[in-house]
Length: 415
Image 1 (tube, rainbow, N blue to C red):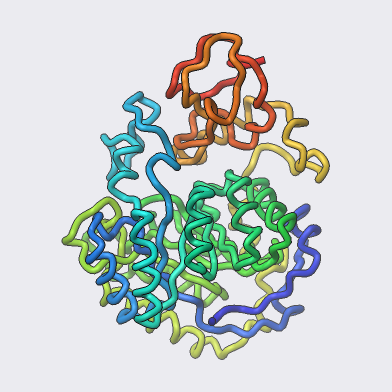
Image 2: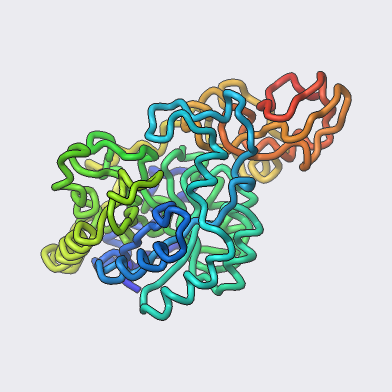
């Protein structure tokens, strides 16, 4: 499996202060190898199993090392509600639908997974998935999934990250909506589970992402967390009509030492579907694969002269992972969510990161004085409620008013 071998010593120091280099490329004497190329199938099967199987075959021909699935049901992500909170209206191709309607089109049925895994293995291409719930992890473990990815919007779901990390298999975490604090929380959850085989992916959670937002120079700073790093890329080129440089960010990432590059993959965009407009076709992916792998040859095979984690280099000036409002907490406070004081500033900052992130919602009607529990309060999409980290704090509290299903949980709704 092609990757960059990196030391993972002193990760706790790196977590506490990302400006301290825990694994300098000079110190690790890294060897540049071609990055692992992942073809994300996502929703590009259009609810057709035969198409999903053909997509795996196409990805193999295109030179992908792995295909990736997403393992969830609509009910594991959100609730079926047409309330304004659940209607998409954020300038995306999905506007006008509810979240539940979108995920009903996009999900990969659980009953397909066994056949998809078997087919990929028969074709000689790797396969893994992004689980979004405990039931998904259970299914994937039965199928001997070799590694797992945490999607960008799930980086706030520490319970899921802990469960996935407890498998002791490689774990890939996308950082599309991440602050430094969220990255630290996720990595510490992995550490507590005894898992140190981690890759952080630089990601811009836009669909498609604009080239001017790509900020590829920030990617190598992820090495400061003492882990491997890579890219999950949603760019499509200059615009919808000019995809000639759709692989530009992937090529740049390879030259900067990415150990993994992920792109959405589809047999043909003419098939349509919820993710088709920002996905690569077979010929495009194959061209990218050839160019990315040529980078390792052209670079001379060594990163010894490039100290990507050095705090004085140019990359430090472009990093975006530290643009958070709150300060890093001490370990004792961090590991005890009940000790947190709920901050209005944090809630406002959290909502601004992405409307598709999880937050706490009322999922069953609760009468005034009723007790909040894991059945009537859940961490689901969208992000209008309290951040998921506060769920342990509010369990057992009593409602200060009648709370209706589909309402985001707010400060003042419980005592």
